[in-house]
Amino acid sequence: SNPSILILPGDGIGPEVMAEVRKIIDWFGAKRDLAFDVSEDLVGGAAYDKHGVPLADETMAKAQEVDAVLLGAVGGPKYDVLDFSVKPERGLLRLRKEMDLFANLRPAQCFDALADFSSLKKDVVAGLDIMIVRELTSGVYFGEPRGIFNEGNERVGINTQRYTESEIERVARAAFELAMRRNKKLCSMEKANVMESGILWREVVTRVGQDYPEVELSHMYADNGAMQLVRAPKQFDVIVTDNLFGDILSDCAAMLTGSLGMLPSASLGAPMENGRPKAMYEPVHGSAPDIAGQGKANPIACILSFAMALRYSFDQGDEATRLETAIEKVLADGVRTADLMGPEGGVPVSTSEMGDKIVAALDAS
Ligand code: NAI
Ligand code: MG
Image 1 (cartoon, rainbow, N blue to C red):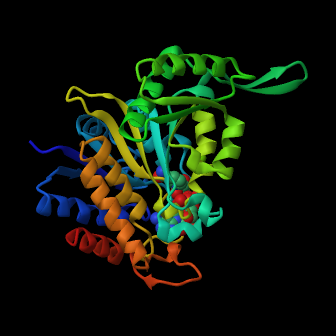
Image 2 (image 1 turned 90 degrees about the vertical axis):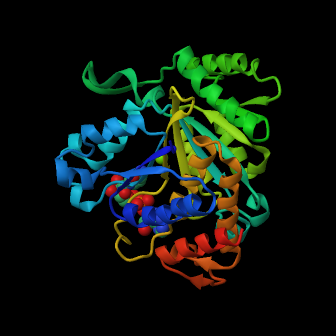
Image 3 (image 1 turned 90 degrees about the horizontal axis):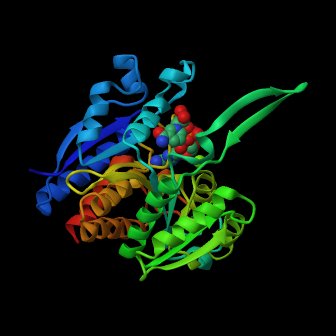
């Protein structure tokens, strides 16, 4: 049977960008003999409107069964008044938690045609292609004790940075596997100079590295890492780091490449029975209520997320490259959604025209 994909378009521009991904999926089925069993369901505000919860149990069960989940975006002003327990983002959190997606992959890739969009000088970022692997399910955002407590006559806010060896080991292994598929270069970032969890992190990553003798492993303090990412990002290939540092470093790396509308992500968990990892793919951006319903959204972040699915869930690296190359070609031709329109101008297109242009470039590939 065909590999299965569950599509959760969500709210705001989510359904708009996902409609373009559908065109791409259909193209691979028709032209590359790469058919998927695609089902679609609700998440976020859309699910709340129908079921009173941001993710129905049946949807959660489906997500556990499929080979990959593709998610658009959730949230919007209409739902800001809701109780925290049923807020749209809780749908997303439930998926991540119950699928145990511990490795968050955030590529920072600079398409040559968009190098002027970077916050940095063109020659610092042109051709940039790095991958940050952020631990996503543990660390200081989850560690106990946490809370605001009374201490003497004032209060104290407490969070705990906590990592077990096995939590470090599994994300390290994911990063080494990735490095093996790329350029065999991995940099691990922590603060072993001032944090116990950092000392353990470095020790465990080094130990896992013994299973990957071909990978050139280096270690860097995360603060220096932030500086190096801005100074000379091309020195890196794969970076692995914890939840907190990864949150900050991946946002920092994102701005190396320009528009939020260009950034994909993947969240991976443990291998399933068929050997594929549990996986969810989604653009980094949110539901963009300010432009929703106007045909202005850039669908490329979501389409690149599907390219990641081709590569990491379906072992179709060549087809992922084909898709990325088609996107590069369209951008090189000057085709631009509004968010990509720079001072040098370009060919303005809507969300669906951008999808059509990418399909046409695939046809020509
Ligand atoms: P946002 O990412 O939705 O939008 C930030 C800015 O970037 C806006 O000006 C928007 O128009 C623009 N933008 C975002 N994606 C774009 C695209 N594909 N093409 C062109 N322009 C794009 O973040 P914001 O405004 O902070 O949040 C809006 C809603 O989205 C909130 O309800 C928030 O909770 C939710 N959100 C959801 C996320 C998710 O589903 N993973 C992530 C971030 C926010
Ligand atoms: Mg963040």
